[in-house]
Length: 227
Image (cartoon, rainbow, N blue to C red; front, top):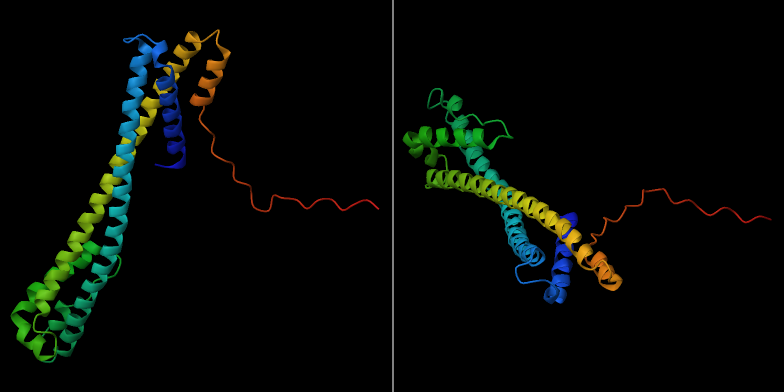
């Protein structure tokens, strides 16, 4: 959750504590008690969604890092095959055209090229190996294709979890704000002649504003002394 959402969560917790202290003032089936119970449920939901959001962000970041590593490894595979194919051009007509490197910056294009390399290199594996590519270069290539595909899927899954949790947090915050608004009227009606409890309520239900940032360079030097 961001700072604004955390401040709302703190307000909900203070309101919950207020009603826990004054629960006996409200009838068992009263609207005040019902709304207080609803708010407790919303707080629990928020905590769960916040955990899911943090987990999604972590998975997204991990997927981004893993994806970069997998991309780099796959490009190295293709560069080795492409370099070797150019050396074999005098032996196999047109081979260098089959193993051209794809442009950087598009993982799907990289994967498409890698799959084509794997298919086209298979019948020529003996010649590639004769040029000192590892005997298992095709197995390595296919493993690195799978690694990049998996990293992309994991990153997308983390992003999806993060986005879904953020949307759920927004919904829970909206419901919590609406609940506190309704409770505000009930409490002020209930304790209209009890200034101490009203002051307690106002403090509990107040949401802190975000601190203002000082503009850089806005501070001015004090004026020189007269003299």
